[in-house]
Image (cartoon, rainbow, N blue to C red; front, side, top):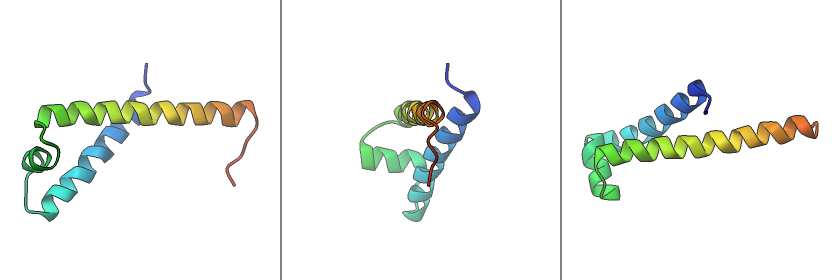
Length: 74
């Protein structure tokens, strides 16, 4: 139901963001999310998907209202 390309892009952005934070602290992503959020890497990836779906929903709503009411971003 979600546009696959957008969903994948947001998941990738989420994972990349936290991977970079982990690397800044000389940690693996698994170590970082375990220490920071007290979750497993599997749960982190589930969270990434949930977060991406919510972002895509907001974007779809924004595009819908933009088209429906002929709104432009200024």
